[in-house]
Length: 184
Image 1 (tube, rainbow, N blue to C red):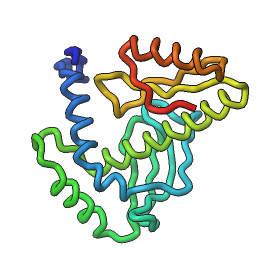
Image 2 (image 1 turned 90 degrees about the horizontal axis):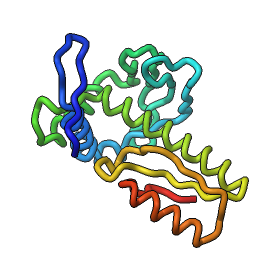
Image 3 (image 1 turned 30 degrees about the horizontal axis):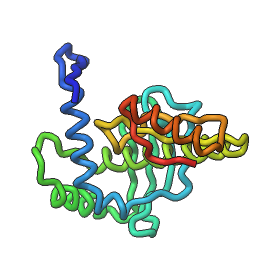
Image 4 (image 1 turned 90 degrees about the vertical axis):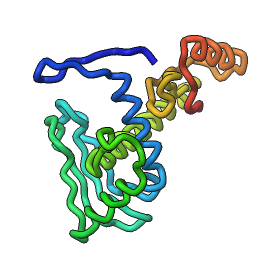
């Protein structure tokens, strides 16, 4: 992984690659919990997003509505309200139980909910993109960078359903260091 640094507001720098690795490690550790958390009535408000994704949704746990989440898209935290006031502590304890990495790299429940919401929005974008591509007779690819296979890097469409064209495009994408997450 290439070392890239970025500057914090205070002028200090941090290693972006190390941050991305810690972020991915956290999400891998949270997989058992992430699979239990879902959303209903998820709505992304793209026109209102400024610094962060603006969205609203009901939160579900094991398929049962347990609260609400929203982010106004102005760079602040996601607001989470649970119907049962003890659920925040229960889920935070579950995060602590699942995380066995560096304590400084442990993220919180708000980070996990926000990230899951971002994933849902990405899935919705992919579905819409692929549907448009297929409708016009194209083939769509959802790609990730090899070094971060969990994170969607972008979508690519070719105006063909020809197996040879699809194979050639697949080879071109992989030669650029991309992996194919989905194809429609």
